[in-house]
Image (cartoon, rainbow, N blue to C red):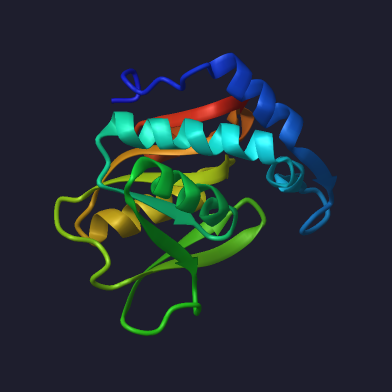
Length: 185
């Protein structure tokens, strides 16, 4: 599937992504370089460029919905879903949703966390494009995909703005297709 998912005008989109990120050293803890998308979000043209690229991927993948991983994935997935004419499913950090929820714990590069999805959100067999800002170690993305699959969805692909290839996230996602608007090697 990922071979079939091509980002339209990929070079321009990748340049937009690169220009829209800034590094924040030692955040959220010493030794971590946080990839901040605030500059991209603040630039209406850049934001529209990546949202349209994600919407195009959603349409091309045959997704019936777009899921966004809290928090920055929300900012990207919700407008992409709307632009593609699809529903949006929020995959939340633990404790943010009223019960009942499905829950998946996972390891981060700097600790542990959990994601939740409202039970009953996903219909069996629905096809979902999962969206997040950065693919680093793959822990968050894998947990989100597993959570959606547990709920009955088929993950058609994971789409991210930036993949940090040296951190090895892609292999941790198994055979799930991954589309990065830009890959940092």
